[in-house]
Length: 287
Ligand code: NAI
Image (cartoon, rainbow, N blue to C red; front, side, top):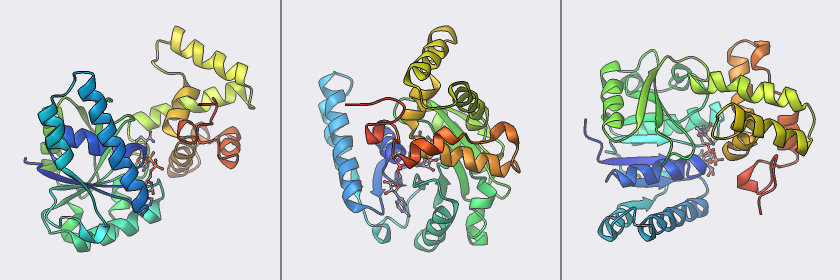
């Protein structure tokens, strides 16, 4: 399989990392965001990251120069209609995502693959309004945060996904240093399903906002459990708003299964606009 050009739609936490990772695989990247100014900022941040890697000796200057020429911010209507792969990384809202897929279906040529980076929505459901000719070219590609560093990519087949195509993608990622795994189309796939209880039980352990307890839980999980990050640190990194949306959709998709129930502290944090690192305030304060 040849992936020479990719369009990344949604240039927030995930889109920016995914775009940079593809760029570093020598793939041409187009970045699109409904907030054009924001896409320009993400583009500038990628340049900054590449310069940082150059300064640390992790990249060569010729490569950095090539990468910088290979990435452009575009309006949706102006993307390359012959793109090999389009990755959606917009907000975790099913209807907004489905609307975007309908537009992409019209813009793109029949050969283009469309992938969603959704954390929780079933792929078969997201593909529902696509034309019949596109349904087999639609799948889930779930990257992890930060996408430039985290190796895992969950490759998710919907009921109509062409399994041969998704297997080729799986091989493509594994050949480039990612650890891809092929997952069933179950709510939350593998990691986000298992992780619901990691967050849920931690939230239930502290119950209300109490920084000392939060720090204690994180410390125990990190130092005794051997995890790289505690649950609250991780929720701050992911975005508490994103984490809440994922929890809500996994809970609903399992027909209100109590073990996946969201916690009111998550909602309280979102109501207070304490989204985590991206808003400089979450369970912890970031200066
Ligand atoms: P984010 O909030 O950082 O970024 C979302 C971006 O999408 C924003 O820049 C927004 O302007 C843009 N956007 C919204 N609607 C749009 C539209 N209709 N067309 C184009 N752009 C649009 O969100 P984040 O965290 O990057 O999440 C994106 C997706 O990735 C979600 O589906 C999320 O569940 C998933 N995800 C998130 C992870 C995380 O750790 N944050 C990890 C893995 C997956």
